[in-house]
Length: 501
Image (cartoon, rainbow, N blue to C red; front, side, top):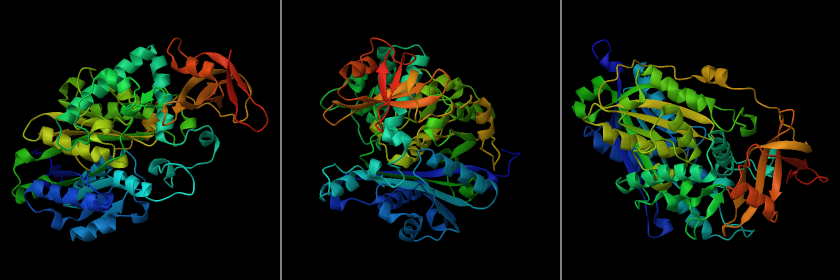
């Protein structure tokens, strides 16, 4: 610590979170109320009344109540503060809390702020309940995720049913399973093991939304209460966005914390971190069995902090869908038998859209306080698009701030050639990845195949719900569909269709 100016060494000194479970939807807190309450709890946690002197407020964008956006001004007003720096992220991406944490640490490192507050909150459960009370012109059930303004409902990918993350992440799951030589049963067993451990962590975590541990088989086996969503994912393998949750944390300098009388064993130090991203168009990726930007974010963070995996006491590997922590744990070398979360994961801890990692920060800080332990936070957002990793520690890390956390060039150098896309292709092709989408009754609605032509060009093809033979081929696990040959068939203006053989 001696070589660093304590005025520019950032530490986390306060954390807070809230679950809101109103008996009547109209009594629920809106996202602003959740954020305000979370920061008030974080301020109380500091024991030093820091929030009134906050000079930087950063807010994770919320999706549930679009009529409120932007909300940073409303949060500041309700808290009675007037920070010189105030902002809301452009989108509710899963990496947002770690990005805002890193930016706050840099702001303190540059001497631009003394006390930084970061918060986010979603009230999707209440929003859904209120929407259900209103009649719609169509018969569709309200779905805030699919109805969000940033979900483009037209275009090539969307016409094949690839609209929201639930539709897209299975492409990574199925391609990754095949690349690692796993059978369907083996891939599902890995997912079940990770998720079961997460449920056990959530059961012991006060802030988690679902606190009932479940077995690995219960996670992956379809049932009346665990319907299939998009192959091979069941409801228990998908982020649970039907929550009302808020979380926030307060960052200040080591010097300011000491001036305010905060005990050193209540502080958590911030280490180095790294961010990198994939192309926002998921059809313009080089592969679906791995992510160069994910690998770069994690590996560069470990190198910058000069630590090995065995030096980590805890990790939070983002868990919107199993393919993400699977990719992350392979990069990190994290054992399957150790929990990949400190909060409970996005199924059991709760999946408040872009703000889950704020809850992970809260849980990690509570784990690390008063110890010399280290914890790694890996965040992911978009459609396996945004990656940001950072180290936290119960003891000084020696990391200097500000830091440049942009390692995009390194990730781009690791990326293979992106195949061109042919939206009008017909002819022989090989399955690169695929999924099947299911209705609420558990029956197949449609399938989609991402295919490669003999020239390596990428194209999409559909599988009709009534094509039971092909649906079974894609889902029964008797043969690995990835890598098998078939034909893309076109008839007039209709969607291209996948035919086996």
